[in-house]
Image 1: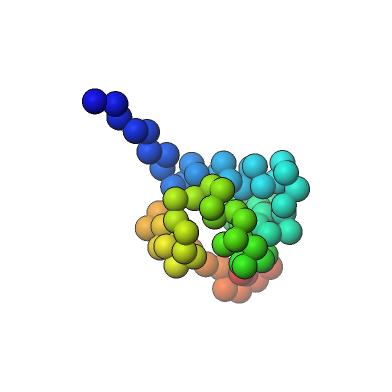
Image 2: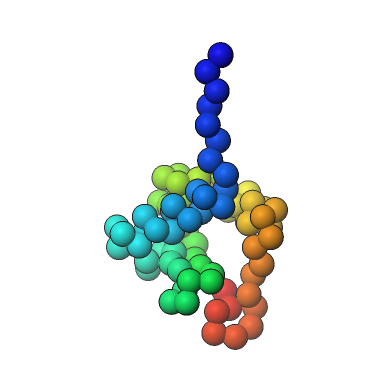
Length: 82
């Protein structure tokens, strides 16, 4: 039987952020300049364009659950809040 390879979510996220930068869609989602976090600038466009192209999830709450599962935290104060 042939095994399907499953790409871990953190790797999918990293590939997505790098590719988005390369294709110039940083107005939707981007790394912060220091590279320690990312920001979703336009959630509607992120759901409409980015998620179907890069993620298995099709709903934003599922994407957020994956972030939480892997220990990502929302920054609610300071220059990196979002």
